Image (cartoon, rainbow, N blue to C red):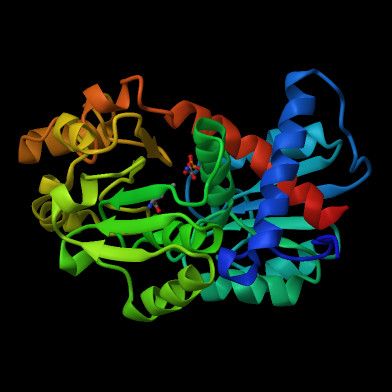
Amino acid sequence: MGVNLSGRSFLKLLDFTPDEIRYLINLSKELKGLKMAGVPHEYLKGKNVVLLFEKTSTRTRCSFEVGARDLGMGVTYLDPGSSQMGKKESIEDTARVLGRMYDGIEYRGYSQDLVESIAEAAKVPVWNGLTDAFHPTQMIADMLTIEEKFGYLKGINFTYFGDARNNMGNSLMVACAKLGLNFTACAPKELWPDERLVEVCKAIAQENDCCIRLTDDVREGSENADVVYTDIWVSMGEPESVWESRINLLRKYQVNKEVMSMANKDAIFMHCLPSFHDTNTVIGKDVAEKFGLTEMEVTDEVFESKQSVVFDEAENRMHTIKAIMYATLK
Ligand code: CP
Ligand code: NVA
């Protein structure tokens, strides 16, 4: 039977079968092809979506805006500074109101439970644009990017370096398990993912002929890796006071030339972005002054190298978010 995601919310990959995720990747390729060829695809003309952002964003917001416009839809952006959201009205009440005006709602915020209850309340598809626990739209872009580079996903050795219990570590572990990539989290034990999620992912991985591995050994994590992935060490919403301890825990897990030279010869480097690979940011400068570190999760050399596919990955956010909106609203 064909896949039909019409009317569904997109809150975390755990809710989707491998066939459904595959469908979204294929649809993204089709929509990317149309965009590249300059073929209009205003398939959802007359519909409207609203984007709720409780945390800041560049890629996700712009991907939803451009994707929606390419599909012929109207778009409204709201944040706490420009609406009643969260101050004079709960997010759930806001969503109930917006569900009566809009055909779909994007939400970026803190708790996963909240985005789940927004989806219950809104009665229209809700898309999770990132919570503390998961970042599912990023996953479709990342998997599309890997498939574009290698031609396949099953059997790819994928290693994630850094805070493996944040939204990216969690989501990548689920995505790899669902799609048959061998996932390794390379991180200090303090930052390993929640054991219950690891168990769930191990069971999913077994069904898809792949494995989940956790290690605190950089050599073990690097050797045989086809994809080397990292994320910022302190996520949005965490207090500034955690920087020092996080730097101490993670500095030896920096993705640098040594890591890339232990990985497979044709390995690629990925990062969801934004990234602290130099001191050209306010936080980057501040960390350099306080802790004497001019590059954090990845060195500038690796970030700028031929192996780095981070900007292809960022572009794919738009094609894949467009596919998620189209699949769930058509
Ligand atoms: N990768 C990502 O979600 O980027 P933004 O925070 O800029 O949306
Ligand atoms: N872990 C990061 C991801 C940003 C896209 C954060 O939550 O800030």
